[in-house]
Length: 109
Image: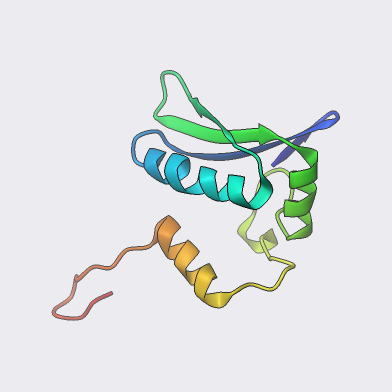
């Protein structure tokens, strides 16, 4: 999220080939279901990046109240202020950046 003059821009970025299905088919509908707004999709020319975005100060204020800061994100500042469902949280982290593999012997990691 970023502030510019009187507007607030909300954007979620990713790789336009590797993250397209996740962002467009999963995150975008989830955002629409939660906030009632359909995020726009933008593919960056001459780059392998894309974003889903919207300008909505009411949603940005809600996300900010939940613990999402404006501007550049630092991991130490990303502390939610609302109670989390631990199961959903772990599933969300795994959906975003998880994997299961076997590297050393028969044990899964």
